[in-house]
Every structure is written in C-alpha cells, then in structure tokens.
Image 1 (cartoon, rainbow, N blue to C red):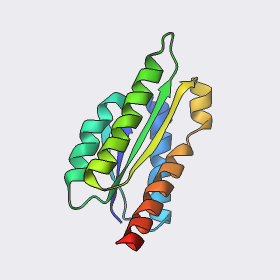
Image 2 (image 1 turned 60 degrees about the vertical axis):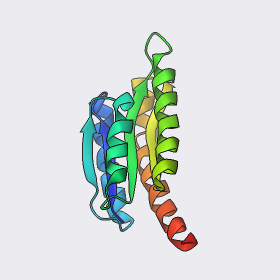
Image 3 (image 1 turned 90 degrees about the vertical axis):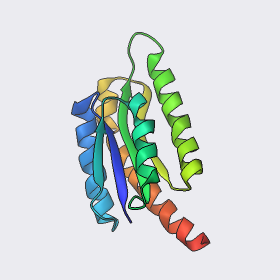
Image 4 (image 1 turned 90 degrees about the horizontal axis):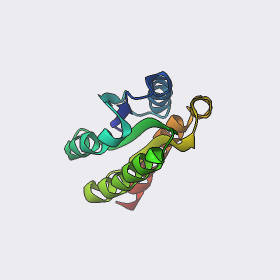
Length: 136
C-alpha cells in the first residue's frame, strides 16, 4: 500500500506531531513509508490531494491538519470546505482519502490532545484499501 500524507504547515507545532504519528502508524500497518507533502494550510490541501490521487504510485491520501478556532467562524468554513473536497476527490479518483484534520471549534490545547486523530485517518485509509481489494 502506497499512502501519501498531505500536511498543513499552519499550526505546525501540532501538525508536525500528527504527521509523525501518522507516518509511524502507516508503517506499523504494513504500508510503504508514506510520501509526505507539505502545504501552507488546510484550505490548500485539495489541490495537492488531487495531484497525488492522479498518480499510479499512490493508493490513498491522508490529510493532516489542525483548524483552531479564532475570533470568527473562519475555522468552520475552512474545515467544512476541506472535508467536502476530500469526499469529492475520493469518489472522483476511486481512492480513499483520510480526514486527519482536527477542528473546527477547538483551541490549541484541545488540538494537542487530538494529535492521535492522524493515526485514525491512516487506519481508515488502510482499512478502506483492504476493503476495496476484497470488493474487486
């Protein structure tokens, strides 16, 4: 299984920890060492995910980011748009896309408490790849 990680550099103190846990968990589950791509922020992920899903050497992608609440509802817009794009891309390319993005509505402490969500997203992609193989 060849998995790519798309990691948001925004809130890097959180996302770097998430990416490391995701990478280790992918290897633990038997996936090849994942290719890691960095993007500026969560909202920038869909374009990179789309390019990766087009590649024959990528079986699935995990999106890793932390959307922390600010003074406006911006976090909800960003998280919602990115989650919708993830579903659309998975269906368009017939490959799993894991949503390892925490938020919206959380503060930095809550974001740090949720870094294991990146492992859950890797787990989902690996399990979906196995399930899709059974269906084929």
